[in-house]
Amino acid sequence: MMHLVGTCVLSFSLLMASPLVSATVSKSFKDCSHFFYMQSPPAGIKGTNLRRVCQKYADKLRYATLYDSSRHLPLYSAYIFKKSDGKRRMDTPWMYEPQLVSDDDSGNMRALPLTEDTPPLIEDSQAVLEDYTDAVEYRRGPLNPDLHQSEPDDKSSTYTLTNVVPLLTNLLDASWNPYLDIIRRRLNNFCHGKSFIVTGVTLSGGTLQRDNRDRLGIPKYLWLAYCCPKFDRNSPYEVRFMFPSYGGYALNEQTDHSVVEVPLKTLESFLKSHTDTDNDLNIFYKGCVSENTFKKKRDLTSVSV
Image (cartoon, rainbow, N blue to C red; front, side, top):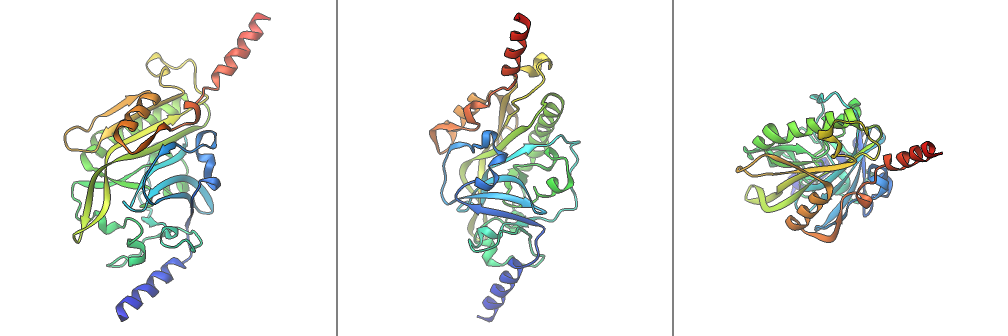
């Protein structure tokens, strides 16, 4: 009994600690809708016990996450791509989301405690580092990766367990991380305005277990879609058709790790057939509309006059 009381006191004191990162959890993305194209979150994605997290670091909102509390993993993270050199942060501690522990919490995300056992108030509501200890084939795969951010604080904010899913090591190293770098260079070179990215997963039904308990849902597919409304109309032919929007997906299994790049509508159709979604699933409002079209019309008008 004393051990239980001591654990609860420890948990409470951790939740009251001074934050570096904070987040807000609610039934809507009202406070962080600007991370979505036209301030519209993806429509049609379903799940159980879903929580909407506005991730904040150093008193600034950084990105948005749809979190499945029953499976202890995010279904997607949405962020604005920042022109980046592709470097990673190596000095940021892993963090957790206290608002998933208690709705009454102030929303300050904190570093996971450096203790032998994670307090149960945290562990019951979300993934913890111990969930990955014996998962030898899997690594923590971020949905909003630090290499897609430019500022140190933006990079640091991605190191929260509410932003990662268990991915096969081979998938990360051989296919997904190289694909993320391809997207980084493509948007660096040919996107002239904001790029909105949503990265998410479909679920396999399998779980990672610890102490004979189901702890984390295992993704079956990992997917990404970007929307760049204003882009270089003189980009090379081999990438011109990949604007204003495009996407990709990869199988999180041992058989095949290749990333398949597809148009946005093809990706949405694929997700409809591989996950629990509504028929009206859409990732970006109206499929991401090119702003170049309007400029082109004005140019043509001026020429005709």
